[in-house]
Length: 309
Image (tube, one colour):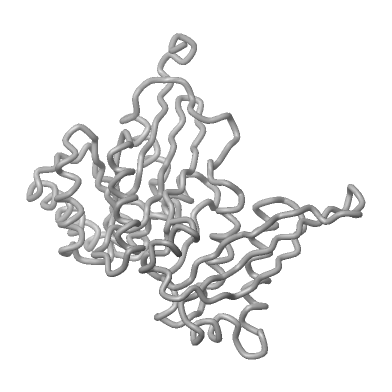
């Protein structure tokens, strides 16, 4: 089989880093399509989302993981477990360090953990380079080299990138591909992610709900798509997909925030999410959203299981 794919490389790479290091934005930039939701709030990512990059010389599957952090809830612990499981299964790891923030205890902690994975090649990816001057970037590259020396990691490469401007994203893709084993493609041509549509839709609703909410809310929101059914009796040239989804929060006071005055906030969330979902699916959508309270779900194993964690 390998004969047909002489010189073709395929495998998995993941971006890791502390929350808000730019991992999801970078994943979307490398894949060239939005598959991971983005928020200015840390710890937005909750699943290991796989994005697929197809090239004539290889296929790179990028796994976007939640940020590793000191967990305060059972959800936090489960997200950290998910990160570590992912690390153990990939062919290459990119540690993301933002160019505009000093290297701190969080970065050292993650680098220390990565150092234990002696067989997996590691790249240092300095993100958000569009936010800093050339001088500041040079300082950060030196700091990243020192971080490697301090933790005993020999970086396979150190790459400064800007996912926003696209600067050096292509180079990063090449460097990651070079670390993959030779072998046939793992996914059919044209596929961009292996996430089920329901998961992507739930994530888009959550992204819309996270915009503009107060600090206490982000981690308390979970979204479950209950059903997706094509509307009956519609002409073939005018289909409509009915999507029913529930937004779960932990307390009644949070429910009031998400719904807003006379339902204004929830309507806004629905409009924003619907636009994104229609772009994703390429079909008109009727989106029906309901807000429910699942008391302290982040700490309750039964509720976590029900919400898909």
